[in-house]
Image (cartoon, rainbow, N blue to C red; front, side):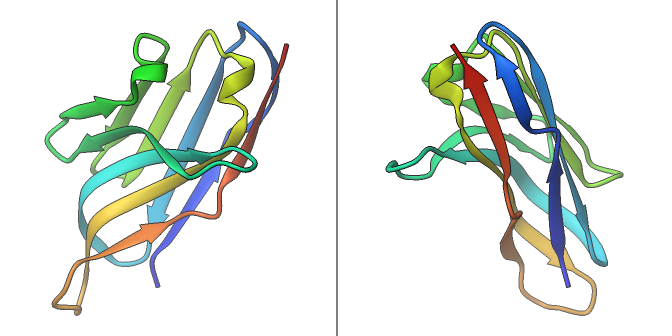
Length: 122
C-alpha cells in the first residue's frame, strides 16, 4: 500500500517561511512526478508546484519567486520551501505522486497524501 505523508504545516505570520515535506512509502520503484496542491475553503484544489524525476519544475504564477520545490528520488521525498508567505497562501496543502510504479503491479497509479494545514496570519 502506497502512502504519502506530509509534514511541516502550521501557523505563520505574513512574510514568514515554512518548509513542507512529503515522504512516499510502500514498495515504490519509481515516481514520474511529485507535486504540491492546495485547497482553500470554498475553492477548488489547485496546483502549486510540481517536479519530475528529471528535475523539471512547474509553478503556479501566484507562487513563482517565493516557493521552491525540490525532490530526493532515492528517498521518494519532495519538499516545498515557502518564503514571503501571504494570507492568500492559507490552505490545506496536499502532496501528490503521479505515475507511481510499485513492485509486483503492472500499472502505474497516482496517489494523494492526507494534507497539511498552512495558515498565514496578516
